[in-house]
Amino acid sequence: MTTLAAAVAEAKSRFSEAGLPDAAIESRLLVGGLLALTSTEVFTGGERVLTDAELVRIAKAVERRLKREPVHRILGSREFHGMDLKISKETLEPRPDTEILVDCLLPYVRQIVAVKGAARILDLGTGTGAIALALLKEVPEAHGTGSDISEDALKTAAENAARLGLTERFATLTSHWFDKIQVRFDIIVSNPPYIRSDVIPALEPEVRDFDPPAALDGGPDGLEAYRAIAAGAGDFLEKDGVIGVEIGFDQRQAVTGIFRSTGFTLAQARRDYGDNDRVLVFTRSDL
Image 1 (cartoon, helix red, strand yellow):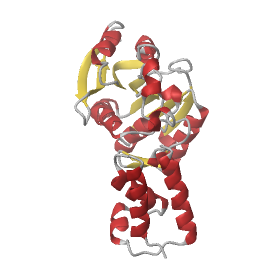
Image 2 (cartoon, rainbow, N blue to C red):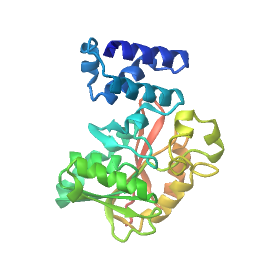
Image 3 (tube, one colour):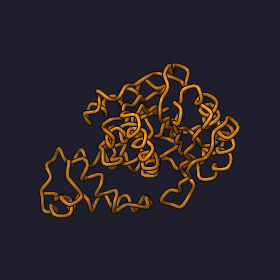
């Protein structure tokens, strides 16, 4: 007989031996997730005897983690801004720092709704749909479009919208940045690829080997996506609209310069939980 507590302890031991830094947290998260248990239930239900089928599932998942596959990819979903989002092969795993981008933009969305009665949001490179769906969840008068070059990502975003009851207010579109966009939006938002191409081989295996390359690679200087967004946004942004982007920790100056060169003004900058520059919000008064 193997109990829940014993299974968690075994997973923690193996993760520790492999040098994984968060062995205690990840063992509880992985085993609990596989068994559909909350963290509290994992703590309080330690005496539960696991079935052979449950033990096999846990053993397979532990082996995957030891090969550096992230816990949330093994589980197939991740919590983001109070939502449980499905993730897939061609979607970036949504991370807590991106919640800061959502929180930065929420006051702008609400202000636009207060004036116009509604707001239209475009999420460029939407992936799981995380950013757009979080904004729609918080503002019932908002409608969003998630664009991406990946059909797998768009399918995943649409499934997440359906799971959250947001299908009527969320559309998906296959587009490389603004190529297929035809209407204007009040809010344009993006967490684009911003890692320099030469840095990617040195990333942690969890990122390098499991996050989709197209969602990571920002070109030789990491800034290609920002140039594309800044160059095209003026044609698709409503008067008094705003653009919000996530950036790399050392990119504030460069990205601000790129947007300024196309007529935008920096309205807000925010740091992440590690005190690194992470979010920039731009406006443009001449539209």
